[in-house]
Structures are given as C-alpha cells and as structure tokens.
Image (cartoon, rainbow, N blue to C red; front, side, top):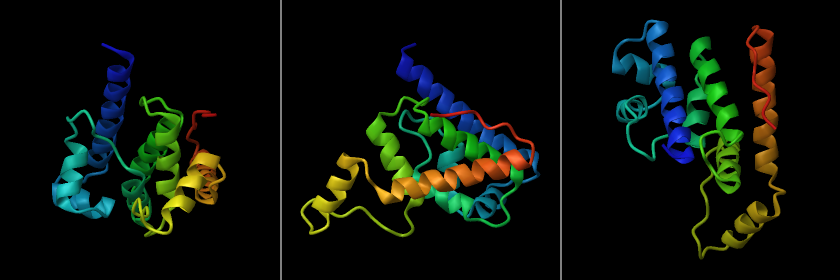
Amino acid sequence: MTTLQLAKTRQLAKIRQLGEALLGVGHLLLEEQASVLGLARSTTWAILNARHKHSGLSGAVIRQILDQPDLPLPVRIQIAEYINEKCAGIYGHTPMQVRRFVAALSREGQRRPRKHSRGWHIYRRRFRSGRNAQATTALREKRELEGQLQSFGHRVPNTK
C-alpha cells in the first residue's frame, strides 16, 4: 500500500468509529442517526457507508453536525479527533486542501464565488496570502472545542 492509500484507510477507519459511537449511544436506525447528526438520511448513509476513495467529511458537513445541540459527547469527541487529524494532514491532504477545509468549518452559509464573478479575485487572494480571517476563526473555534474536550478529561492530540 502506498502512503496515500494508508492515509485514506485511516480516514475511513475514523469515519467508521463515528458510526460506532452513534451505535454505542443507542442510535441504531439510520433515521435516528440522521436526526442526531442533523443531516439528511441519504447524506448520513453516504458518510457512514464510506467505501469510495474520495470519501470524507467536508467542513460544511462537520459544521452542520457540530451545530446540533443534542449531539452525544462520544460523537462530538470523534468529530473533534477527525478535525484534528485532518488539519494535521494525516489523511493525505495537501496544505491547500487543509486550508479550504478549515475555511469551510468557519463559514456560515457562505459559498465560494464563481470563477468569473466579482468576488473571485478577493477570495483567491485570501487563500494565496494565508491571511484568511475565516481560517483563523475556525482555528480559534477548534481550540475552544479542544478546551471543552480536555475539561471532560479527553486527551486531545497535539497538532501543529
């Protein structure tokens, strides 16, 4: 197996752990799992039955899951670990992909501008310069979540 294949295998294993956490707190049916995650049934099924090479959780989907007030703690912990590992590049993503992921975590209802629209050049400049305010907001939120997890006694891996 190549390094990239190992990274993707690890990502799929982490997503399976998310499904196991849902089962562990008693959500056995797909409808219950979708309700707890705050996602459509088809999206939940696609995530939990991830077997495609491009499978993974996008920043927008993770934000939608974390916005659920009744999300069980074991599921929240699995999501936080997934975020940490994806931000560390453990799943084989490039630095640009990680920056886009972090920016998507911080976006609320914003979409990327089309390539030839007015906002495209501003959007492109922000990601190239690395001074994206949305990315720093997402990192701040990630650190706050890590602090909450540590207060529950969960050890959060150091990712720099």
